[in-house]
Image (tube, rainbow, N blue to C red):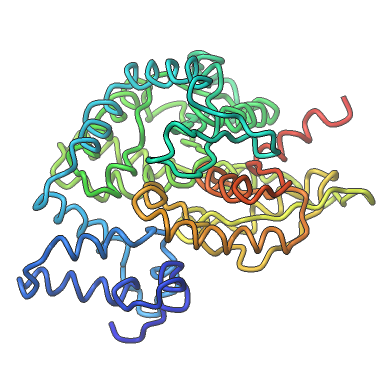
Length: 417
């Protein structure tokens, strides 16, 4: 692979201009590692972690190189060789693999967050943590809701009399942090007469563990979730598995099955069914329910919003125009495009914690594009992007609100009441 097309789209390379920070350079390092030409796996690991796994290189690769698969397999191999840090091992293999323990930890955190968080009076509804400055720096973080989504709604069992029944996989962010996204998903599904199945014991999808190369933690989380899906049953009465988190959807659709080579035939059978049914919520609304978006025009005094495209939603799942079309349903808003709308915001899951300086530089570029758009609100379809963008806006004291696109859609259901 010598073309170097990935240089034009890699958000990390755009900041560093270092060959080792772009896909072509990383693949050469991995090839050399495989042939034991490089005797310093720590250095290779350091280079591999300087990647957001945004998929821009793969999406724009003219020769179809599966860079994401190469990087994920590389991280797994390196982590097996170098071993996982004790903190990550506890989080991925102990905390996240026990849903009740994780729920209780978040619940306890919501009760006592006032002791360490300083709420900021801004439209992003963020807080800072002065006592945790050595770990978080000046980062703005979201506050935790009083009730998690699964606590608010309990177990939903669906309704077989409906045309469609879907399992709603909220993911950690919509269940425990941005519960308003889950509220929006459920209100939309109920409004469009869709039966909803939502258990209260899903585990994390495992992407954070996978991004850290922790295949053991990933396997444990996947197998926890297989048990939940088996209990629900996927053969009859379940048409789709929807999520409002593109990272979760991509993981359910692609990674669970792709990395299940050592699983039992029964487990692989369940994963094949999940993969076939996993769908992003916008995709479901636009392409399955075929909601008509052609008759709505913005009001004269409509508020200006701009749209940041999630990397996983556009580059991995191929969903782009659907979100923009659905946003038209709300006549109170008019969409104004920002420059580089599909450029990564710099979150990349744990990238924002492991590479804070690079993440800040990439995020600052996104912040400038949002401000230059002149929008009153910035909308995105990914909870992780919301967190990163809210951080950037909060740090820069910018008076722009951040919301999930499904919140804008759900708002149309109560408009005028």
